[in-house]
Length: 512
Image 1 (spheres, rainbow, N blue to C red):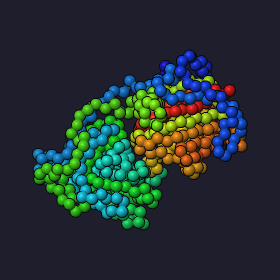
Image 2 (cartoon, rainbow, N blue to C red):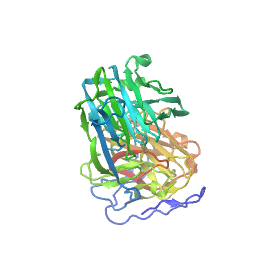
Image 3 (cartoon, one colour):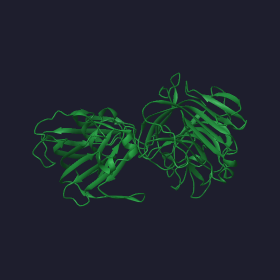
Image 4 (tube, rainbow, N blue to C red):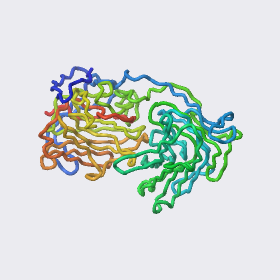
């Protein structure tokens, strides 16, 4: 088992001799002549291996990928109609309660008489009380059938984040294509900082949430106001390309933020009016609900890695068995917060043509998350160190599933040398392939050509019919990197999770 290695600041990891593959089903060796893609390429020899994961491959190994360092956690959801309380400021009877951030679906909401979309004006108002403490939830419009992950598709809501004796109010939407934008009650300086107003917990506020489809030059404008509160207003403009994505809303109500397990909080809401329909909650309104009165144990707690060989069949392989699972970002400052799982391969470098291909499916995605597949070094890429300068592991060449929340998720190439030189593809250089957490299987391919880009080296990535390229910076190929594993390796800066699977892999395993 490969271990995370703790070193002194600035100390470089030593080289590691690649182990020799043992007998058994270590994969099928292929000798391929003419590594040709559309667009041409030099005639080269490359030794490839095929792994279909029909059963657990003996040559694959890893570290912390089935984490035992982080405990499973108890989730208690207890929110909905409450006939005996009146915290929000109205008469006895209101909605709310204990709401816990968790990966699993839960909601309590008013079924709208008809579906609304980004062409529909919408509004809601009422009274709000946030109990001192933690918590993280959405109050707004959503589509019950697509509640999954965060940012949550088909949502238009205020996000309430408990901060002890205060709370923050963020404003956000997410389209049907997982693209989002946000505002905050407070101040945003684009590219520099977000400063949320510290709102006092434990008191009642009058609030209003409205969406105007003709606002922001016809693209749509979302607004949230806490009455008579300095710094209590938030605005969020719908971006033109996001308006084209569309979104559908069929409920208004309360939804926990669905990232991973986190501390619970309480909110209470009363005297609600939704698109002109009033609810005073003197009696049970009979709103729809799922998972709002539940208690269970979850393994989806950050960063409890849970990936590797799996007997499942999500990625489109012919038989059950594939690679993947719950993949959190890593954190190089602590060995147990990094993870990898890969096949032992012979030594490859940036002087070698390298390729990989297979099938991929993304089941779930959360903002600020990354899943990576590619070529890495069993020791260098798992080097524990205090630096937070780079997210990409040292000695890495591969693909990230990642993206800013404004764009959803991309499938794009990245690399880092045995040092600080690193680069990721950007939209400015190439249109990046998009992948969605929708359970649809895709074919993908990766090729590194050391002779590309005038000898600097070039990476090309395809996802179905989408393609992008990443050219190495001058001198990075010479700086060098060494790879002795192929598989999943977590980044070096922590974050949230992706649930993804890979199958029918074909990948370089030797330079000759």
